[in-house]
Length: 613
Image 1 (cartoon, helix red, strand yellow):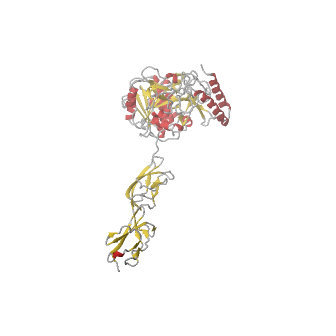
Image 2 (cartoon, one colour):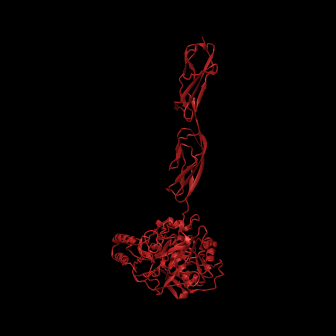
Image 3 (cartoon, rainbow, N blue to C red):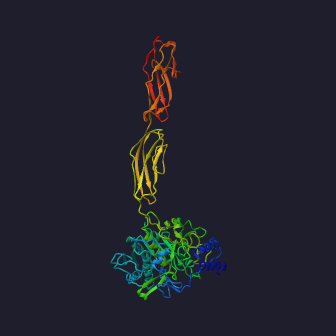
């Protein structure tokens, strides 16, 4: 049974949204959101049937595809035909609406979005032309190279022989959704021979033909062998795969390929214009009051939890959880008008079959995925770039697997696109160049500054420097300057790398030759005093300087040794020496050694002198 307190809270929020001024509404909503989130956030909370009504009662809908076969499409149509109408009772999303609701920038990119569907749709191109002409989108035809239709083996002339009315409507929805979200994107329609494993052969064909974005608006029950499908069909680097999560809400169970860890699982929302919202739109998880319809969500029974889903508590789901992201899917509040000549013209269709191609096209409008990044995990790395959806439920469960809440939740995943910032497009790196200072030379212990200046092709872009191979006693600063007092003589090869936030990078190498100083005496050392027995002689005072810095005075440690006839006199270590009386007729000399840390020692030995009486 529906919790009356929760429904009362949702009803109160709904009334306030409609009656309050925008600024006041936000404040009241914040408080109300806190109440609702408190109710629904714990994984072990009581059963939740939180439902917040939209601006009007929904019209009856019906599923487009039958459940016969291995996989079914996830499209739903309004049984009442009211195309193009935008009012309180009937609302259809136009391409302009989609751009405004999801803050999409204008794009001129022509990346190819591959649509994988089953069976032949003979009027696909001509019906698409009617849709695009009605909304004044640029023509997308075989003739101008924008549109291409092939069979599952890649041939435009070998197409499926079987026709299915439901899958034809699915194809029309997919083509319209891609066109609406990315009018300049090219479209590759790959038609599988059946709604069985032929669909995966079509996926392989799409990537073989170079598509970087592959959308699948279909799914089936999970299979114990699906890991082998992942490896065979969803393992091309630089390709983003998208799959609809289904239209039966949480209670319908998880489906494959949405539960693949290599596929972006796209859930569904309800959306309508609302000037009281900051976005100008109100959006909530798609889920009917009786919980029989809504974007699919849940916990896989087969696929292990991928590393990128650490945001999902193990107590909520110990394996792969869906959804990852979401977009408009409610046929009544977010469906789009689709033209189908076989169905008599225009009709309004939604379902997660709409959401998946919408997201795929938005991603394509941002740029080609970086092949070094896994497209699914890159979404989670940019979680703050999405609109967090906080309201409504899509099923009966005691956790966020079926209740929209702050952060990740099953019905809406990380949320809905807010521009293209959340997608893995990598901007073209800036060009960086680094000035090479040439060979640097210095002495141990002497301070030296080496400037390694880099320039970026975009003026004002911050550059980050790193260096390896630096002499001990030196360091690199944030501005690229290397400063220090090298402590060990050697020839060093330094590698400097400069990078910026756009992945621009440059590397430069230079040599740094570090040698010791040479100590120089300012005068020639000599003996002062009378060379006779009993007399005291001295080494004349000597000043020293460094030969590397002209005139720089040094105060080295000085040691003196005295010799007689070339033999050292033990104990005679001072600059003054008293000549013993028995040294008559002998020759004396001295050796002076001056040394300082990091410098080459100075050494001088006198010529022998003859003692006089």
